[in-house]
Image (cartoon, rainbow, N blue to C red; front, top):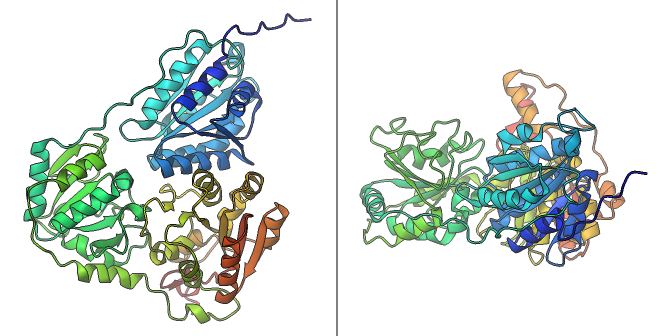
Length: 561
């Protein structure tokens, strides 16, 4: 018989890492348990100050960790095993990278003495995760695991936040941790504007005729400061792609959402701007409308751009800037709001009204023919029933265009949505949001494509007793791709999904409640009942596949009208 492995005299590496995570206020680890991190799962599960959340798929675990990090601004952990588990988790990690969401990922790896032999399920995880993380590493000594975890937490939360991945051979977790070093302690300070930078920006904004601000995810924790700056300098504010909760949508200086299919009338104030201040946004392809804005000289020769970002690599990376400042958005806006400079009144009422006009539903939506709901009617039903501070988690898909236009994000921290466009995000994200803030209403908005990618996480919600509401816009179609095909090819291919499926029955099979709605009245009733239930509820809203986007029909694009 092989000799027994001696028990460690002190804490195991797994116990030490769990202690470090708890001390750093990481409250949850989402996972599908795997054989290559048995001791870590056990160590976390035995703690009263952490929660080990077992999910039905690593993609769901990753989206939950990403959603928690996005909601609270501090990382949750995710753990997956070896090649298959790590591969399943990768989509969510890529989402965290593009969304600048802090996350710490533990990847199980083959045993140390088998590394490099293409052992069972072996993948070079450091190389695999390098392009989709801020930092990836493989630890090969148990006494270095705490050090690596501490470093990972610092990297994930310093500068532009993001995910880190630590691969650990399965034999290390049960070994002795060795002498423990100091815990992460105080994280590096986040800089503010220098006084000269503040004064230059203040004079520039005050002297402009039509100043606007583009606010991204980096400004989510600076909502009050952003409002104060906008009011002080009478500047209109645009929300970057899927960051609509960064500024109250009912504020008269709100100009709209720079998302997919942005209506021309919403872009009017940006086209006319002679000063564009970008705060906490990496100016993604969608936010910039395919990199058209806010490049100076494209529309107005004298327009200029200034950018404030915590990451020096983002300043001027997309658009040439008149001035760039590396600073924390909240501290920079706080300084700018305190500037003694004053600005004249600017009338942004017409621009705000232009945006509001795009949020008005189709008048025919309430009486849409054919036994199918108009997507506008679903969003209107949500607005009529849900509280203002409802957390909306929304998936990828054309249905989301109606949500982006119709729902008013007037309260802070109410939107969880992947800028990466990852399908399958909404349901697991809703589970995490409800775990983090059980007192708030949480609603997942998802198409039938995304619902059947990660909808099994409803079972996780049932098991954990978190009563989320899932609204499925079921149209039996991969709508976004159908629209692109119709526009570019004049025909569609491989976009039909079998249906309509009994998604309410699917939810009930997982232990949740289920309801089907064909009319606005049925939908409103189902949603009201869902809010009164202590069980998760899926509402299968049967929507018309022909209504492919606001103002566009699929049959019209195909020339069938």
